[in-house]
Amino acid sequence: MAREVTRRRKITFTVIGWLIGLTLFFPILWTILTSFKTEGEAIATPPSFLFFQWTFENYFEVQSRSDYLKHAMNSVVISLGSTGLGLLVAIPAAWSMAFSPTRRTKDVLMWMLSTKMLPPVGVLVPIYLLFRDFDLLDTRIGLVMVLMLMNLPIIVWMLYTYFKEIPGEILEAARMDGATLGKEIAYILAPMAVPGIASTLLLNIILAWNEAFWTLNLTAADAAPLSAFIASYSSPEGLFWAKLSAASTLAIAPILVMGWFSQKQLVRGLTFGAVK
Amino acid sequence: MATLHTRTNARVMMSPAVLMLLVWMVIPLGMTLYFSFLRYNLLMPGMEEFTGFGNYEFFLTDPAFLDALFNTLLLVGGVLLVTVVGGTFLALLIDQPFWGQGIVRLLVIAPFFVMPTVSALVWKNMFMHPVNGLFAWIAHGFGLEPVDWLAVLPLFSITMIVAWGWLPFATLIILTALQSLDQEQKEAAEMDGAGSVSIFLYITLPHLARALTVVILIETIFLLSVFAEILVTTNGGPGTASTNISYLIYAQALLQFDVGGASAGGVVAIILANIVAIFLIRMIGKNLET
Image (cartoon, rainbow over all chains, first blue to last red; front, side, top):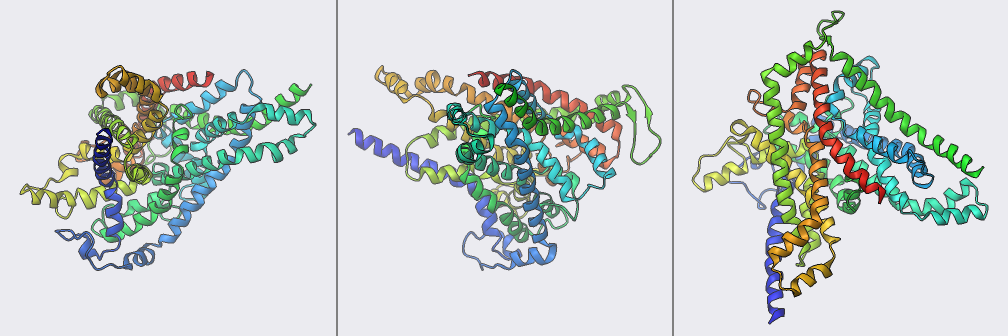
């Protein structure tokens, strides 16, 4: 009897769960489907869901009309570059805070966090003018710097929470045995720290890839990554839905896959360790 | 001796990150503050002059500012309402055992990874378009007149677009908190004859309080700065119907080239964000001690 009830309960939840999941996912699915339609079928009413003439044409069109690969490359360079540089600066900082904390460590961490609370629009004017004066507008290097600084607090924080979990006794033991700082890093810390560093890397690539305030305001034709490039589909090309969908599918697919792999780290990174 | 050595090491290791953030904070903030007291328009170079609080007076008494402030609050409040209530519901649902749980979880969190410009354009065109959009087709199916969502209900439409992207965030965090709930406590309450409603109200909800607060605070920080969704859907219009503070300052700076006015606006935006930030930082700081 009780088993019958739990079974029925499970079936109910399966139906509700899948219905809601598919509904929330539908806009993404719809974008992917539309990217394989012709422009005519993309705007057709009634819309066709699966039984249309499947075509890859849009994917080629997007490249030939607007040099898609250049912008995709910009996205790759900017997100990898800003994350890589950020890690380079943040790893030593987070490490020293985790393993040799001083009385001020907590204040430094909190202060770093507070820089993240600064609304970007509050410094839009000076950053824009500085970029103009230093010829950084519409350059990849400029964006790499801004995104690196924007995400640096998150990187330091995430690494700090991961490094904190490495037991300090192991380090002490190594030091007692006469390990030098270099050996300490190479043989003890690095292997234990790699998973944390990898998830920090992943989350920050996602954040940098999807950033759309600075990319929209500081880039134009040359250095625009996908998040800014897609915006060019907004008005004049508004009705080229199939091409918009193809460009969008390509822009979100890699990040979606990475995001699915980093669900757990996402929570930790975005809540600054407040929820684990 | 060893401690002195490690302490110097620690300082050297921290300094690049600290210095960079310091420069990144102090210089632009100082410039914003300085510009906010100048009459300074990019179209009239060399005409800069000190105006005291003139820009603030201009910005704060501009009817567009009150509209933008109101829109900002509506947008933040609306998205919070949808994501916190919806997220709690979704998290409770996904926490139940059912077939394909893992896949449903992936489907639910997917929207978070869609860049704002893409989600705004997809919703604007393929769903909310008054002639060819899916919503128009659905409306026709029910014999209703299609709605031109972004023209008639611009702020509501943008709220829905943004909420779609943030719902997964709330769900994921609440779900994480839910999974750390002590099951024995729930079982004990069940044995004592507590119904599922009272279990939710007296055990689950208090346990979630912290996660919910974190969701609300962090989302508020990000939602105060919503920009791309507005830029690609309505450009803040019609009129100022969907202009928030971020968009207003952007328009002032990069469309009207009024550096002074936009900087005063920037200072106002920073003050608003700080009110929220203080609470968030306190909460996270408390967590550090444990």
